[in-house]
Length: 462
Ligand SMILES: NC(=O)c1ccc[n+]([C@@H]2O[C@H](COP(=O)([O-])OP(=O)(O)OC[C@H]3O[C@@H](n4cnc5c(N)ncnc54)[C@H](O)[C@@H]3O)[C@@H](O)[C@H]2O)c1
Image (cartoon, rainbow, N blue to C red; front, side):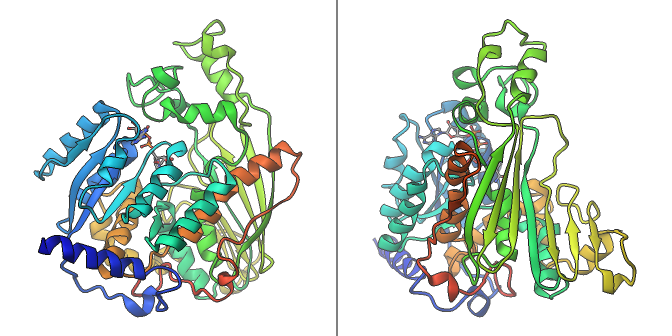
């Protein structure tokens, strides 16, 4: 009983830490002293990404994984195997169909991590907030613009916080560049670029035989994301996955915290990559039924965004042609320019500071600059992050989620970021549909962006 009433108090005060109630930003509030409190977690969806989060959480002694929900018993079994590997108690399972997660929400848990297919995010996120469970939400774009308002309204009604689990914001090179932006090394920011430029053909047509390039099947015959993601490429055309590219730039540009996204326009190229892949694959061919499928999603979709403080942002979605991985970041100000060419390594990009380098029209490689400006959070935690997913950034996003809950401080990527970033998808779809017509991006903060202060990555923050 005592345990439960403590938990209720904990949730009550945690909910109070939401926007409107908490005035102090993380930087003034949080300390890195150890806080002894266990966070009781549930997982909604234990597919490949859910298992990635579980692995991060299983390494910690301040988290108990209490319950897991997924209609796919194979994925649940893989998740249980992971728990056993870390010699932790087996969580209670909820596997009775798509809605069994609602029963997980009745359990005595503080928070849930949601890593389900995109079409489930809104319903599950809102049900979780309404059940009083703090939410860590995986990335995607909204199915409808109204979904974004639903997140905001539910948060404002319930005051149950939701964190946008955008791991790329924590990439080491990106945090070093953020550090340099904050030191003023780029001068006044003018333009940013980012995107999702990742050949997903082996993910979209994965039959589970081997993890990659393993077939031409999707839907019922597909494995992992091929079960559901490929359908979006048949029925939609737009910036389907905006947050990896936009999130880091939005943080640097203080979006929703002194700046905001005003409007966008998107164009989509023709769609050729997926059909060509099926036709040329040894398990496919011209006569394969999937060679008849019409893919609506253009191979390369570009989205231009205008910001209130006069900057522009260019996003690129490029996932169905051959290409090496690169999210294509670029940060350009009056005093400098950075272009990324790798997957987070400090030495894989190019950088230019005319005055500081005392030369013109000549790039330098990034290694020296980014190493000298390594972000304090990376310096503090690089050992912990060493073995973590996606080059260490998964450690940071999950650590932030847990430490903010334990310390009762606001999430650095909150419901307003989630709504704004998710909104890019339906707005870009509308724009593509209407020949690039400009779409206004709603102000989900209802004017509060003018006074909200940046908190991400400041000293003392997580
Ligand atoms: N941040 C990152 O680096 C990153 C990487 C990969 C995926 N993702 C995101 O994570 C999410 C999941 O992707 P994934 O790769 O794990 O896909 P996946 O297909 O491997 O896993 C999805 C899981 O959701 C389960 N599921 C389906 N309906 C459900 C329901 N109603 N209730 C509970 N579970 C349900 C499926 O059975 C499956 O196990 C997506 O939003 C994806 O975009 C993020």
